[in-house]
Length: 424
Picture 1 (cartoon, rainbow, N blue to C red):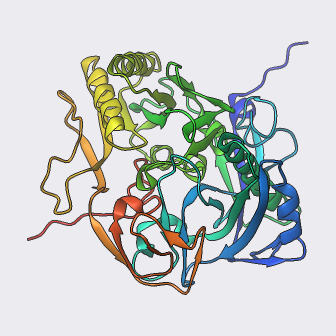
Picture 2 (cartoon, helix red, strand yellow; picture 1 turned 120 degrees about the horizontal axis):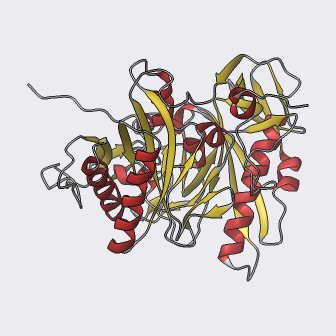
Picture 3 (tube, one colour; picture 1 turned 90 degrees about the horizontal axis):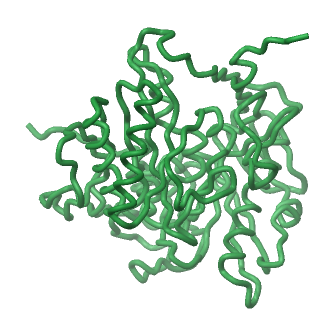
């Protein structure tokens, strides 16, 4: 007997969302009436690892006079209902994700904060001046601070922290498994080629692949040395892509953003185009490898029947070259391409904005100026550390820092809150 299975059954995903209106510490983890209670002893058990001497959990909410420094990653709490796993390849087998039901604690995030090698200090302000620059100032944040075990290799510390934060994100979401959802988001399978008659657009997403502490996991593995690959956006929603990249705070894509890819969301919502999927690309260092990856990415977009592509990056000036080469490669084969860049235009904004600009493509969107200075008012409390090394100041002091240090402020996937206006 032959059974037919629809594409939606194979790849459709349903997000059962639970709105979080507050987060507090307590004896046991629970979720009721929008309040997320985080069991302190449970957190220690979930994050227990020989490479971590201790962990400390705190909660902070929008409007509180709190600053989080040395932010490393942010994860939205999610878990599966029934079969399957979130964060495949890290918390379970690297099996195809993006199917079935996934519970989401909307409005909450689990953050890790502290020192790791090669990490650049990231700042997140929860209230007052500066809070408007990062979307994570609007979430109820469960913050994990840690002390490495004596003599533990830093790579093991980073891995223990990463896996522990993912496990905690699942643990928190599981508190809502038996609670009626506040909303249901149906993410249908991608339309077949030519089925809608609309122009097909691919989200070309570059991710960092520069070794330990500056890497991104795809199904639990680094893409370093790989060629571009196509992925269904439903897989992103289930955590197929996890950040292990702690450089360029304003220009990094936390795991939270991969789970809620803004470019994908905009293309899905559009009535003018159809989303043809996501092409993930490594960001190699050498020019030859950058050209190889860019040509293959363009070829893959052509094979998908793409009429257009939106190309994004992760990281600073080196990553400008990855976007520029892909834009040109796409245009060369007749695929219209748009690139998202953060500028590095000097503090007054008058210097050339791009380290590497495309030579043929000309559709570019700025996500802000990396060098712009912003002032942050003093706070009553700080998490993640007592001092901020980039300005040698107490973590609670009034600060003037480059917007480059504010977590997510210039996000190249368009997650940020920075806008521009013409002066008349």
